[in-house]
Image 1 (cartoon, one colour):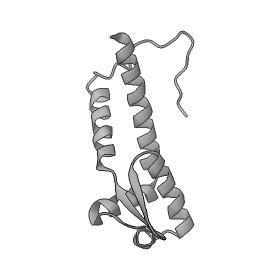
Image 2 (tube, rainbow, N blue to C red):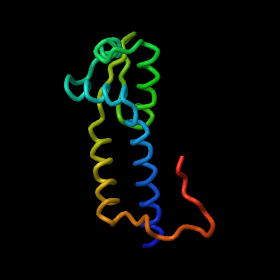
Image 3 (spheres, rainbow, N blue to C red):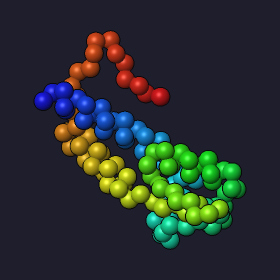
Image 4 (cartoon, rainbow, N blue to C red):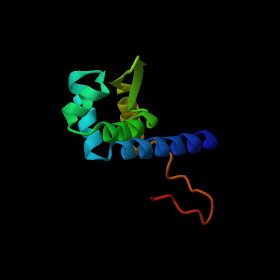
Length: 118
């Protein structure tokens, strides 16, 4: 049982860190807001609405895609971006366990091991 709680706690912490990093940028938050408000759209339209160049928005979208915040679908030369609302449900659930004291992160880790803070 402890092993299960530890792995769940570690998974929650990794997932939270990944999502916070992916959303911890103003441009990526703007992208999130535009996709939430207007729904799936082509990258070029998204870039225009957010006010970013094609290379810069592609860089931000890659980070968001790798974190599981968005999905992309290629249709010929066009790439459609879609917000993954399930990622935000995962975020809220992991946050609820952490804040509610049910995440299991208080279980002692190996001796001398320092947490990753960077």
